[in-house]
Amino acid sequence: MSTLFVVGTPIGNLQDMSVRAVETLKSVDFIAAEDTRVTQKILNHFDIQKPQVSYHEHNLRERGEMIVSRILSGEDCAIVSDAGMPCISDPGEDLVKLCHNAGIKVTVIPGPSAVVSALAISGLDTKRFTFEGFLSTTKKNRKEHLISLAKETRTMIFYEAPHKLCSTLEDMRDIFGGDRKISLCRELTKIYEEVLRMTFDEAIEYYETTKPKGEFVLVIEGYKQEEQEEITLEDAINMARELIEKGEKATDASKKIAKITPFSKSDIYKSLI
Image (cartoon, rainbow, N blue to C red; front, top):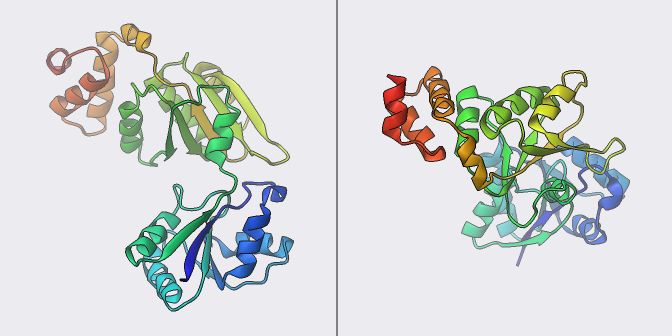
């Protein structure tokens, strides 16, 4: 039976490419790549000569059906992302679903993962964690996402681009608190790999004079129950007001904030009006 191979590729250092991944890419009939130019560099390095199909978030519906059709006709396909494990916060997720629905065998060739790598060297609790990916570029959605995590007790992991890092840190500090611990991991496995372990207050101060460079993985300490006592009614009201400024109704804002603070919806709403 023809197969879709989900192949992990290096997140920066080409020496992290596994022997099995190289052999798989050499054996398949074609490769579905998020960016064919990026993947071509990997193929050239390992002397792999295979045709590529561009497959990304803007063409996944059209190309996904075409790829499934080729596999059903007898061809093997490998899907790769620009770096790391494909199909994790990645359009490859959709292709895997299509293949499962079509009865196509899907197998994994595991490789490097920025999420797990950052968590492993974060110095924070690794027993339980949640991967949250990239935050929305819309201010309202970003705020709501972070508010929903205000009482998340697991370690949280986010991706962030350098040009958005400072505003993201400020938004996170508003919700999680300035004393919450964060591990900022950038350029993992590359020449300028760096891991900074500090609080949100310290991170914001640091990047006031240091320009963020490279792709970041943010690993954030989970909520601790004793923090609940530190939240005042005034804090809850201010959080609700922020939602109202973004277009929420007072009743809806009060309800959302009540879920993540010790105060009731009615207490917050009465103070607002």
